[in-house]
Length: 494
Image (cartoon, rainbow, N blue to C red):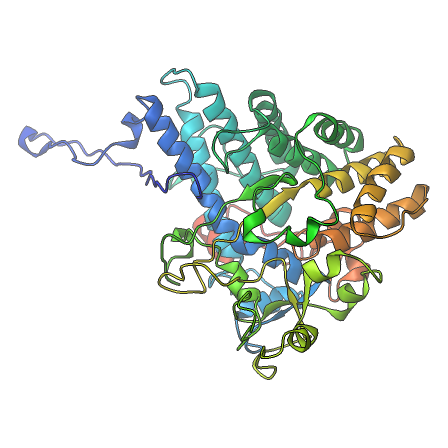
């Protein structure tokens, strides 16, 4: 991670064999995981290992767009990444997700949670001055990873403060999502109470990050009063603000990463190479190259080419009002871009489901080191929580919770004013719908749309092929159910 050392800890459970012959009882040269955590450095190294799995989440925002009504899968052909094509068409199943799809999400997030639980399992072993901060950061990360699991899969197997080790899957049931959410809330409240708003090292979790995520978690459960309270505390007391209208066009450029509007960013770097054989090993953001136009030559030298996945639909393009400052920052209209920049070109025949639009927020930029493979080593951060999102979440909680339409309207109009749009004056359901519309255009391309539709009960009417009672969550990969010996029942409808 940028400004965090690239350190890895491979945590293995070591099997100890007993033998009557003393001469074969030779101590292993490898460090035993049960004998770790003897110094502050041990805890700090384990914490970096827990942070490291944030980088595996690079493609999850892309999944969240493709399964929504914002984008089509795209790619080279109808058979390019079939697991994604199936998710786009709402015909995904428990099988066929092992080549980069839902199974990798499941595996990586459980490895991430296990790294956090490794620290929590031994949290009382050694004391040191900065221990509370280490635990608070660990608990935020565990909440972040568990939130991904619960919003994608619903009830999920879970242990608290203890690693899931091989063999445990035969004895652990799927935990009801209400209990998973309860642990997430507890973790985030602890993190918010014990972390500063500003860290000394860029990329570290802050109090604001914990508050922002907690407000989102409450909103996903329709806990409007709790969501509004924590989000307004962040709005009123935190260090963040909206970028101005003049600043906003730079929002997603590399020079503007970790800016004042960023509440939590996943950090990426191009200083290490990588390969397609190990996506979880990468330090670069591999998703952005997948979003770019095939055969793209940019005469300005700004944008790189790509694999033409995750292409915005005409519908989402039309959702922007005339004059909306956010359109050009969010959507790359390739024909208009080429017209404005003579000498630019792209291969309009090389791609599937091409609409002529691309996700400009997360498209590969020129200027990185391109080590090993240009597609895998892009140093473009993911803005996981932005202050604009915090304002819109607070507005929704205040409005839908019947708490204050006045304050909700204030936050909504802050977003619209920044976008160079006229303010509005709504209340009740009209205000609710205005907030929903603003969330779509403000956050397009960032992976929130599908879950916004699901949690507000609008998915079946907006997403083609969506079946109510089934597609709110995704299937547990069949390989994982088989590994549990059939203990874990599949989600309904799959």
